[in-house]
Length: 252
Image (cartoon, rainbow, N blue to C red; front, side, top):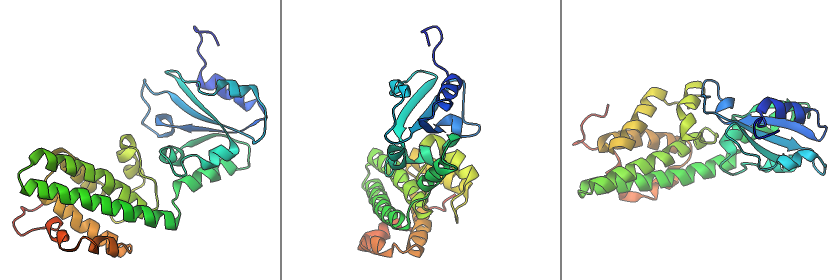
């Protein structure tokens, strides 16, 4: 393609579909999420090649424009992508454009969308401890008059909270951009989506201590039910500072 005629998504898909070395095409990003694409959205496309194959399409490796980003990988590399890694959520919600493996590409994506039981349990325990740490620092800083530090720690805690809640459901946490989209279509079991998002929003913005404690009480119950009581008990008497207090105003 010339500079006046940049490579488009449709043109590349047609080119790739005609190449027998290509076993899969996978669309990620905004265009794989219904209703999320805007006039500024590009096409993010994984091009999956059969292992030990040769094709001229490898010349497009690293292709990146305002309209089309290409990631060209072997089938083996595709299986490993995001396992673990930042790309896991993107691939978990990806859209299959071409699958020459009789559903094999779709099955690989499905595996990425579901954390293994041991992996999920380990991740949840780690994120629970990190959440408790940031929450404790926020509440303690609020008590001691360090308002900015308290708000920053509260905002940090929301990251770990979301990673914890998704790990408890054996799912990769969505990117912030897709959080509302994800919860609207795939709610977390046992959680009211609207209530949870309002709490995350308010705590991130204000560090509301009463609300942090109210939310922690819900998280503690869910975490203990999932077998993570040992992580919480390791905090000892410090848990008292994180739990609701009589002096707290009623959380919304």
